[in-house]
Length: 273
Image (cartoon, rainbow, N blue to C red; front, side, top):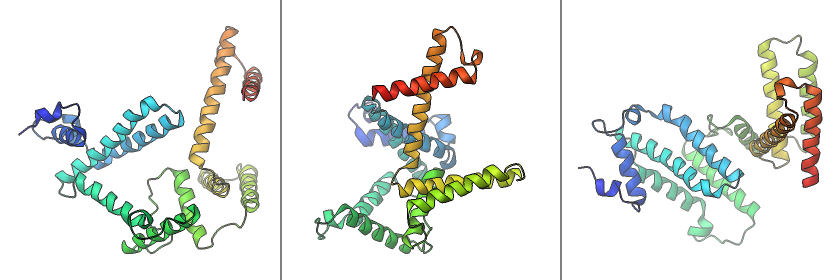
């Protein structure tokens, strides 16, 4: 029977959310859109919601973060409901699996290991435990288990980290920078004679090496690119504002004028900092 009291309980917590999801997917009384969804159709929304969380944190929009985290949680609930309907697993099993994993990976907190270790040692221990988990799943290749669906820059860094553990890595940042220069020169000099497919491949190689440089510099390339996107947006809006003061739009301007306004916006930011 429908549990309407729980549905309308403002303090119903997880049971309320799970019941709402169950009702939305009810084949007779649920929402037609929710009923027709599959794991594949919902997955893009899951990725989008994760980025919404990251965006709120990046902007320090703490008043928005609660809602964004709720949206992301709902994605897990949606997938778990579809899995339960297919007889695969339940939401409780998802929670239990994560709890088991966290307990197993933190023997220094939940077991008898000492907490008296450095962050670097803890990282090494963590990787050892994860390697054992991959072995239990019969993932014996060095690169096994790095999810294909990760953002490309993030997956590049993870692949490179795995390879570096077995010694397949440049010894210093200098070699990585030299490789970037080499790849960029090859792309620049040969682009007129390359096929479209070859240009595509060479550009991918260049991005892959740049991701490797981020790893050597201990920089998250996704965060760095988001920051660069934000900076570009901020400065270009400043260009639009200055042009508007002159009664113009970007379409009515030219590169020389906009470049000068860009440099002004850049100088203003540096002086303000």
